[in-house]
Length: 166
Image (cartoon, rainbow, N blue to C red; front, side, top):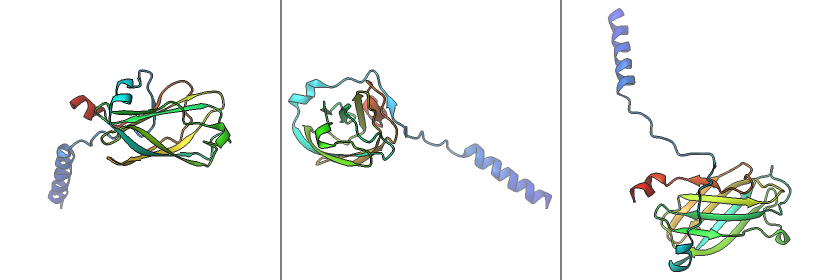
């Protein structure tokens, strides 16, 4: 009986020692990126593709926002789509509990792996999620569910490893 328990403990210890470490998980919360720069070179020279961007505003966001909202997204190879201003207070864009869909033309990209929002104003705004799809890229959703800070690019970059090897 004691030998059996010792054997079980021995195997458990081996399992712990030889279990491979878990892969690093992707950042699940958006991050500020003060060094983010818009890639203006590709904005005018790359082939043009169409994208559908769907932004769902959280129900806990302010009722509406008059803030200026900009969007940038792209791939690991430097192809970037930039929209200097998505908001339009006259059209009731980004009201709380709303879903807004934008049809955007921009440079063609490979798989979208980053998205950043820029907010400038005093009302505040809390997007719940952003879904981006295009002809050459699979649909991808980024979950914010937090207020966007003022005057800083804020979002996700899930392509750091790919861009450093490219």
